[in-house]
Image 1 (cartoon, rainbow over the protein chains, first blue to last red):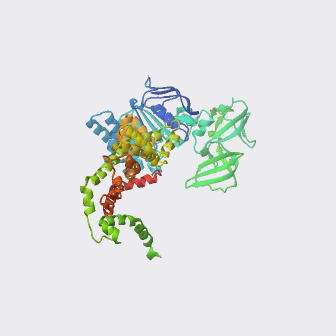
Image 2: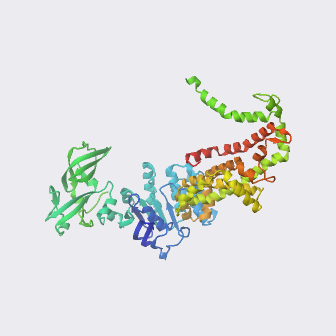
Image 3: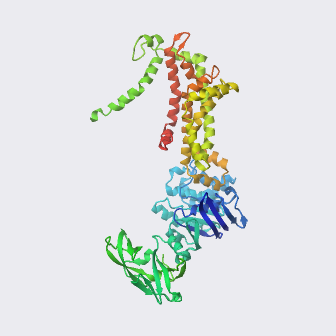
Length: 361
Length: 266
């Protein structure tokens, strides 16, 4: 179990990580979700002990390990860049943490063989990392990270530098690889879809803060605030200022829809709504489609999907839908927002409640 | 037009090779032929000049001395520059950029400026006319150069490699020796080559700081007249032999040097 206790990291006058409390359970799969520069890598380095927190403590399995050197902690790390030792063969790369730990030759051979089998690089063991494809290099790095059976494995956007097909392939294998291991897995990614595919728990990060942490499904369906919802939405979540007047929500005096039963008790006033792009469609679909008039900026058609950027009463909105829906730039369009999937935020941008019961990814 | 496409490179190579050809040409002639006749190739081919160099200790010891202090200098320069370059590449510290630039400015002063202080200092502490004296004097410009070259290569290695090694359990020195040095072997090769080359061709300091025991070949060679009068054939043979070590080293590191150029550091 890893515990960060008000861990903070400042460099000069810049704060890279604001005081953070985080507890990661043993055997859990944890995702750090955030854009570039959100502080994912720094947080991982603090967890691993590669960086020392400016203040606060790091506890591992009930022991304070704040000042303990990374060599003395039982952690592994896989980076976005395919990091292998270029002067060693793939076999020696995977074996290197075991050699440092002075494991017997026989045991090393068994372990490396098993890992190479699992990561499907058995036939590459005699080659140098530079002779492998990107995907194989990353498999080698993952195998090395798994070799010493560490208690915590940190993966810093391990699939980001792979091309689409290899990424899919390795992404499917990863959960199986970590399944039987009783270690804390931390996985950093910029892609909300990746977080949803892996499940586990997700910590949404923004500008050096963990703004939301919980089971991935819950973090997606009920983000604590508007910022967390923005982090956990790609393309970005659509927002608009709305007013609650009695039993109806009103958007820009023109569009209105009934307040769901569970929100009836809310006081009247100003709120912010958020709706993810795939719940806005040119077709009248979903449980409660509400027509929104807009002016199209651009429609991107990519084979089976249409992404329509449009101006909805002053806010920039995006619609993501199946099928091909061509629109001319500057044209007037009517799109339908399925308001049953709306998220509502109060004036402080905190989630007031959700109006959806289930979520299809 | 296309028929003459070979013309420019051919001319270029001829002009480039002319002085070297003339040197080699002279080395196979007798001194009297060099002085008295103009010939494009040796009329009376002779190996006497080379024979003299390989049998007379005042000549061949010049090569031994040069190679000895050049090797010593290369080893000292790269050994000192490697940790320095690592620090410049991996850590941020107060004034690091200024210090890095200041290193380079050491290359901007003419060697003549340092000849007198070195001569006096080394005489005072008994280093005069030793190989170590020349090797140390040459580190003045070779360490900055090596730091500059190595920093470029080290910065090309991601910092994550260091971190991965620490995570795997390597101590700093185990990582540095077992993983890092092999990783930047090409850079070390290039740095060694340039240290070798600059030390090999440097004449002023080498001449000033030596008398007999550590006298470099360049000093012997630039003594144009001896008791036997002008010995142009002999000097040409010595010159030819002086080019060879550099050419051999260039051959071995030619691919790495291209890499160094690509990094913009050489």
